[in-house]
Amino acid sequence: MTKLGVNIDHVATLRQARRTFEPDPVMAASLAVLGGADIITVHLREDRRHIQDRDVRLLRETVCTKLNLEMSTAPEIVDIALKTKPEQVTLVPEKRQEITTEGGLDVVSQKKTIMDAVRKFQDAGILVSLFIDAERDQIEAARDVGTQYIELHTGNYANAKDDISKGNMIEKLQEGIKSAHKAGLRVNAGHGLTYQNVGLIVQSLDIEELHIGHSIVSRAVFTGIQNAVSEMKELIIKHLITK
Ligand code: PXP
Image (tube, rainbow, N blue to C red):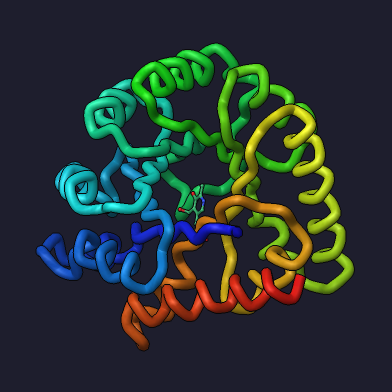
């Protein structure tokens, strides 16, 4: 059964537009769980552009499913994560100028830093996932640093303009999953997934957790977050059943 991870960063983006108290991502998380979210994800960025330290603290106290903290390997953020003890951390690359995470982590060139972080988290009983592109060398490096999960970047699939390019991206993800399973890694996926494009992913790929944010929060503006999450959850289940 593919699980649904809901990324609520953009609830905080709206709050931070006025630096006020609403809308509260902590309330969004509770409603997302009521709508069927299996996992709540937030990205505590070094520049604190959306999620704040207070959100992470309160989410740790209130999320009763799985809390997944997206983060860079900056020492300050690693310390916060070790103190907060989410069930899982997902290590991502982070650049100040980017609008959102733009590509997978380059594990090959940062093996030592990533391996040190993976060890610290695993010693603290926290699961680790590495957000990477479906490239064989990155998958092998992910295995070498000892992570349990990888999250395959689906952005190129989401941005593909026609069916042929989409098909090519699906094939690349399928090959990535095969290599990852051979390497003993568990596989999640996410980025750029929407109500329109999630079906082909569910139908074609063997994924444990799908991590979806922007599309769900966008729909929530009109329908409420509980409804938006349950619609996505039903869509995933429908595609799993007809697989
Ligand atoms: N997975 C990771 C690692 C991400 O960085 C993001 C974006 O924060 C997502 C999934 C969700 O992407 P989207 O907001 O495009 O659904």
